[in-house]
Length: 295
Image (cartoon, rainbow, N blue to C red; front, side):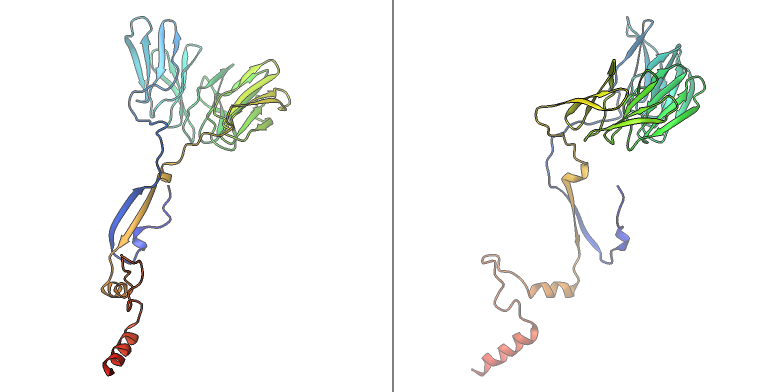
């Protein structure tokens, strides 16, 4: 979070800095960099492959549970691996897509500008995936070279799907995008919430779920809405930013002049009213004193 000012800009001495919790929220989730697993494993020829938040991709014997090998990525892994042509493809949170052989050796890596949460989709000799830099990528599966990328309006966390030479991918901007195989937009369908989940296709129907509390059925060719189904409450879940439940209080030390000035305006705690002479300046107090002395 950017700072709008720095403490160097203050001309007074900082006496105390206090942070108070002003709102209470229930914990929705917490992520650490341990060995937790947040993605689905895949099995291939008796070996189980899966990524973990400790940044490793593991290969484990599916019958005995014995480790065969593990591969260290440069960031935690949320996505599930995909196996194609005896190679593994998997993304990591530091923004790289990896191609790894079945012995755990890296073949290539491709860097994006944001974290990769979704699993890749393999079609022909191309790897398709979204990134939190807002792009949907098409990369050559053999060499790891970019073929094209398409810019969405926000982070792209969903796994793209392909049907009849059309690519369907969602984004946090609330849109489902339909692209041709060259990465050109054919149409987009807008919802009122983020699209986190990958699409399902059946015949001429595309089904997507949105954070706006609806499931939509869309015509795959035209992008026109056919129907939508609401959930019970139609109230979007809210995950507040961390800073919303805290506020900072800054106190500064007072000069002698400020302290004397405050004494003139002290409030009686019992009555909540200003004392008789508390709001009078020095001249008024001196004049009244002299008048009383005459009597």
